[in-house]
Image (cartoon, rainbow, N blue to C red):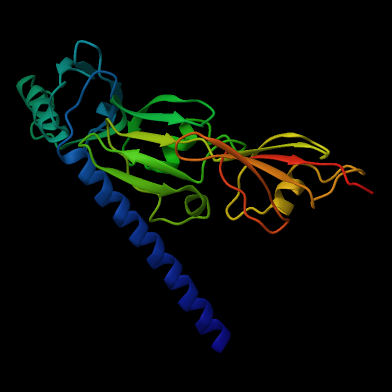
Length: 270
């Protein structure tokens, strides 16, 4: 009996969670569309209560019009969805097609509103706003981040001049606080990750991603490990200060390396 009650509580909690998610999604959609003005390229879905034959999807033409069953061309660019619904209802009434039409219009694609995704993503560019677009949506549109070079944080720059920092690691782990909604005119910038360089007696010299608190030993591991003649004991790092002046000094295995450090791993003396 206890197991059955537990299962029932779990099922009820799951249903409640789904319902709350749907409620928040509906609220988010309302926020997006209440003040939104329709424009060329937007895709709208129209339904007429009691008249399923009049349901249609239409894309706003460059002229600002859509084509609907029976009434033909209707200019809706610059209108809110509520105003467009009212105009379309008037067209059906004036034409004698429906006496009291109850019309619902949903914006499926906000093609007239774009979000820019820039920096270290696979397909930088501008992407159309959808009804409930968020950071994960636009990153997916841009083909995801470039794993080898993308930084751990992105910056969402709003059209109104404000900005927000997005922790990409937490985002990909499912943190909803990082997956914020985006709006038309926003820019999401994924910067280059901090790098370091390693050469000398390592298996794979080159440039590598700098991980947090990365030590010399971990840097050598990233470079494929030491060659048979290499040693950690005589490693040298070249580092530039804030004024661009380069300095060289010895580092130990437990020393933390910094952005753009150049590591030289020397041969063992024995």
